[in-house]
Every structure is written in C-alpha cells, then in structure tokens.
Length: 372
Image (tube, rainbow, N blue to C red; front, side, top):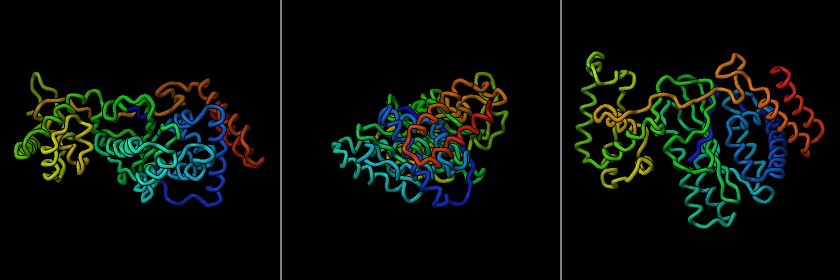
C-alpha cells in the first residue's frame, strides 16, 4: 500500500458560510475538470492524495489555509462537484455520520460503475483497512472523525481521512492512494506533512517494527490464559526503577512508552486465538481489535520477547517546497513556481465566471509575492 502523506491542522470551530461553500464547489469542479481533461482520472486521484496539492487546492478555493475545516469542507465541496456522469469520479463518506455511510456508498457507486461484486468487496475492504491502520497500527492520540473515499470508474481509489486530538487541539490528515500497492501495514507513507510532531507514537507500520508484527501474530496464536499472564508480567515491569532497565547488552527503555491499556478485551484475545491469524494485517482486521488490544500485543512483543518497536512519529518533513528558515531544507523556488503555475493554468483554462477566476488568481499571486 502507498500512503501518500499526513498533515497536521489546528482545530477551528464554526461553519463554512453557505455562499463560500457554493463558490468552493464551483471552483473545485472547474479545477478538477481541467485536470481530468488534460491528465485523466488517475492523475486527479494522485493529486488529491498528495497532502500538499490538497492543501493548496483548499487555499485556492478560499478556505482557511491551516484550519482542520479545510479537510472536511473541501472534501464536502468535491463530493458535490464530482459526479459519475460528468467526471467518472465520486466521493464516498465524509465527516462524522457521513463517514459511516462510506461502505454503503461504495456499494451504490460500485454498482453504477458496473464493478464486479469482487471489486466492490475489495474497495470496501480498502476503506476499512486504511481506517484500522491509522487508528490502531499508528497510535498518536488522533481519533478519526472524517473518512472520504474517492473512486474512479477505472477502479482506482484514494482516501483522505482526518483525526483529532482533543488535548492539543490539533487535527491530523492522512492521505492514501491505491497506486503501487505493496502493503497496508509496512511503511505505507510516501510523504508526511505537518507542524505538530508527537513525542511518542506507536508506529507498527515502520520497518523497525517488522519483527514486532511477527511476534504479535505469534502471541495471538497462544492461549488466552498465557496472554493474560504476559500482561500481568508487563504490569509488574511498570513498577521497577529506570536503573533496572539499564545494564550491558540491553537498550534503555523509557517509561513513557510503558503505558498499558486500561482495559484489555479478553473476548477479542480469545477470538484471535480461535481465528489463528496468518499475518499482522489479519490481526488488525479481526472484528473487535482496536488500539488497546494492539498496544497490549505490541508491548508484549517489545518487553517480553525483545522485538523492536518504533516509537517515533512517522512524520518526515513539514513543507512541500522547504521552509523559510531553511528547515527542513531551503525553499525550492523552482518547485514552488511550478506548483503555482499548474494551478494558474488550471484556473485560467476553467469555465469560471470572470470575478471568481480573478479572485482565485489574486490569492495565488499573493502567495507568490509573499514568498519571493
């Protein structure tokens, strides 16, 4: 699997004004139609799955540049803007209650696209597994509340989903793309974008956690009583001093990582034992398995069996074209100009009214002026 990125956004209250939303629908439709005309449906999904293009599109159509609402509002606008008949691309799901309709909408649109039952089931599985990965395999304190599943009539798909952290008041956006499928559970990101980097993140999709994935599968095949005893061992380890974990031949273990879930659902542990999963993906997709169960299994693999677990936030960089202070690298002016030129060409070639086109170009021009 190829996850294309993550973005962090501060939570903002309020709603998008109806007059602005109508214009967002109109402008986003025009830009998407230019991309579809010149590059095709697959390229549109590629661009929407790119966190930087998605962010830029949100800015161009007039929403707050760093608001969590950019994700939900832009996705809502795209859901209205794109249609099967005109574009061969649709958006399933959305924010809150709408996200729970994703599977039904995949079924509905899949039938309209004349997909086989097997293909529709595959798409529904993809929707479920990407949500599972971003809530359980990568645990960073962000609870998903928005899930949008883009499908083209060619059978390609992309996902834009978002979680929120009520403690730090930030949102985190995840982007997925069906292209170049390799694995849903191993290094799915091709780029991570954001401002808020968490100190401790359980990242079981990292190459560093491959051995832990294997041990988790093995532990699931053990009897529930043995797993219960291992959890008891972990609780005992929480009461030792830091020096007990510092001796030759063993890495120092930070106590901030040693946090057991408050509740372990033993019925789920029994279900995993009965199921005998063949790999980590099957563990995740077992009904009832959630963050607490995965965290308990990860800690068992780490602290009892010594399998390495990656506790670093998987974010790789913060800006698509560099940062003004040279961090993580100086601004790439050529890439910046090319990105803006693409959007300018798209807007100028659209069928927007004169005023809407002029305002969109004005916003792009202000970005270019402030940067250079």
